[in-house]
Image (cartoon, rainbow, N blue to C red; front, top):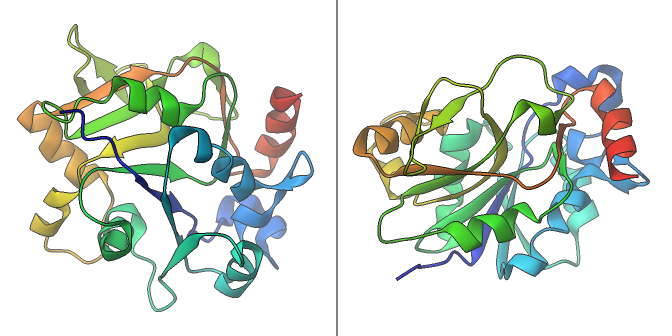
Amino acid sequence: MRNLPRSLMLFAAGFGTRMGALTAHQPKPLIPVAGRALIDHALDLTGPAGVERVVVNTHYRAAQLRAHLEGRNIAISDESDRILETGGGLRKALPLLGAGPVYTLNSDAVWTGANPLVELSAAWDGERMQALLLLGRAEGIRGRKGGGDFSLDCDSRISRGGDLTYLGAQILCPEGLHDIDEDVFSLNRLWDAQIAAGTAYGILHEGLWCDVGHPEGIEIAEEMIR
């Protein structure tokens, strides 16, 4: 059984400190890119993938983000008291997401080409996978400095190190989050356990990707969209 996810966690709780003055009075997901809020570019991807439930976590200037999303069929996971990072944030949101695997998506990126959620859905195999990460080669990466994150073996399992970059989109079985004692932690903790178990896989994105977590990324993303 492929056990496709129907829920998506959209990470939007960060401070956006790399954006400098652009986030002095607004949260990073509301920064305009090509005339639209950054978060809306991510939300555009959900419909074609058959996502039925979207959860957005909030922390910095949460009221503005809530107002922007009002009237849409989107649940809010409130992290006003303490930002929980990706792992802790996803675990807090699980009651809103429901049981089973979930999509997760970063809100500070733009993708072109194939819809990343549709790509993940087509490759997902719930019988052997606990994680399926969307990866990109250097030639398809825009606006990001530094090396890669992962490698793929001949069976598409991932391992740490290599020239492939994680593109902020995945399908994940989140049950292992309950085995982590900390309240605030990264999803890297869960990935490491799944890599060790041989159940973490990756696929390559058929298109371009831009990191829009810093001011220079805005112009790059806009040119990429055009």
